[in-house]
Image (cartoon, rainbow, N blue to C red; front, side, top):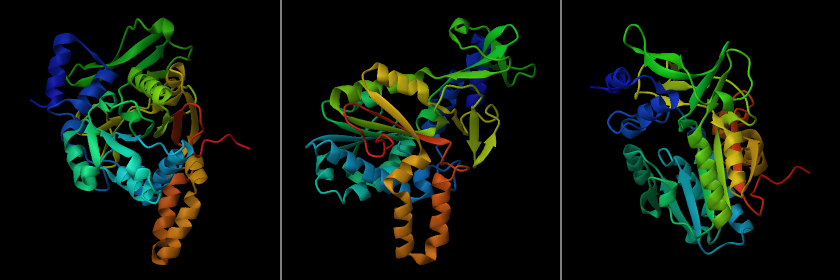
Amino acid sequence: MGLRDRLRAQISAGGPISVGQYMTACLHDPDFGYYATRPAIGADGDFLTAPMVSQMFGELLGVWAASAWELMGRPDELRLIEMGPGDGTLMGDILKAARHAPGFLDAADVWLVETSAPLRVLQAERLGEIVRWASHLAEVPEGAPTLLIANELLDCLPARQFVRTPIGWAEQVVGLGADGELSFGLADTPAAGLLPQAAVGQVFEQSAAQAALGAELGRRIAADGGAALLIDYGRAEPGFGDTLQALRRHEKVDPLACPGEADLTVHADFPSVMAAARAEGAEARILTQTDFLARLGIGERAEALVRGAPERSAVIGRQLTRLIAADQMGELFKVCAIYTDWTPPAFEPDP
């Protein structure tokens, strides 16, 4: 029995499930879930992330981390954490760049928060013994300043979807159609009175998991100091829209077509994440990826790479465009900083 058959049997016996429950099963089912069994990241896989587009992305995050450590007064002990570290490319580039900051790696206790066994294997092959692993952030020891980075993690956290109908809000659910196959449908929701005003047909997405992560980061940063960076595609202001998508071999596919065999995501809800962090005593600010990378000097870094390898100038130019152009990753992707009584690099107030 595959995941499709398991879900059909579950729904047949117990009724429709929420979109969030469907996402969780597709991504994390221990026997058939995408990340649990067959994550395929990279040019030959299902999707690319920014660290795979160019080394510049990870290098600048390494510069950011080392600069943040300097601004914090060079603490002797530091938790350097990446959540959802993929195949380890980003952390590898961060550590390479951070080696140029004397004392940083001596202070850094490096952790990867990863639930996927196949990805842990790739991370170990790339990074070796310098890192330790945890399945959840709570397993990483507290009591020291934290610098945490999570690139394209929020979009993988489950979300519920609600649809405004002519008679009020209903929840979008996954059930069975007349042919017995997985199908979207609508169900009554007790949350109707808590949802915002909207026009008929609007879709509102709500992720308790994203907000919970914001709260957890806010508590940790407020208690121990440091900063967290959340980098993802999503909205900077509250809004509506159906953002559920499935990617397979770099193409969008029907989210119900191949459960467990495609990456399933929703847009990051940065307003909810930031509100949850602030409620725990932290500060939060958001930039576009374009602004964040520009403030860290990605233009100058690209020019330096071209000077060192003029024959690669066209490739480096394409990489730079992919990372910062408004019609590529630059505007859709946002960078959210969670911090306390200091301002992390790149997030200084505009003059």
